Length: 324
Ligand code: F6P
Image (tube, rainbow, N blue to C red; front, side, top):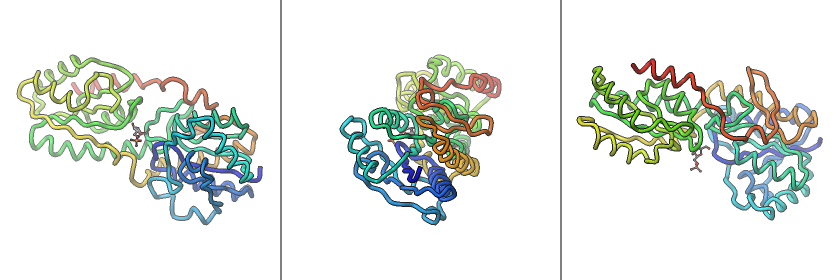
């Protein structure tokens, strides 16, 4: 192996820069040339490359976002787009590629490898934590802390005004952020995509909590939750069916994807960046490196993106008990 390419793709996540840094420095350590690919798979198609050395990645371990930039490339979803990308990689004499991203990124990698035989290793980078074969994805811990911090602030004003707040957090298909940040921030109820608890249950719980003397409450709603109503419709429904609630909605949005990565994410990214380069050197292909009980492990791409990651049922029980 003489040359490794690295790119970030899909939704960015805090800690991606730390992962790129670890990949680049591992390449330098093992005397391999590293080629940075800008704008994910779109940059791959366009040949938007730059050789990176150990000094190219100075002062980025602490930065949010990804200096290589990211994209959700439509063209790469087509066989023609992937053929163009493969040609660019061959012209640039890239022996293997490291892709940092989530399920969409790994799906693209599977096709690229299958159709053009380019060895690919993945690193899980997404705030959603929705990838199998790793306890955590890069960016998730930072996003959790951002969400808890935001809800703490909302709690202050909710409590001053005796209000009910519905707070929307990210997670189209995964409720990890909602469930964990919700419990961490002391939410009353948490709605997630993995289970439809029914609006009735939420209404009962709100009714009960009011009877027990609660004057303000926070409901955390994952963007992909399954009630069939968006957060504003939910607020309206509660307002129409429960008397006396002063309700506000707060959609946290993309602030959840920004900010300096937490120490946990920086360390995780560093371990997985080294792990990805070493996996390539061992001849591994079509795998994602992940973390399981603190150990860096490899799991094939198909397993990593298969179905949805099982939710932590214990958290639901903990929520019920701690919101009594
Ligand atoms: O996959 C990461 C994520 O932040 C999801 O939680 C969210 O649903 C989505 O990306 C938003 O994507 P975009 O930034 O393209 O709107």
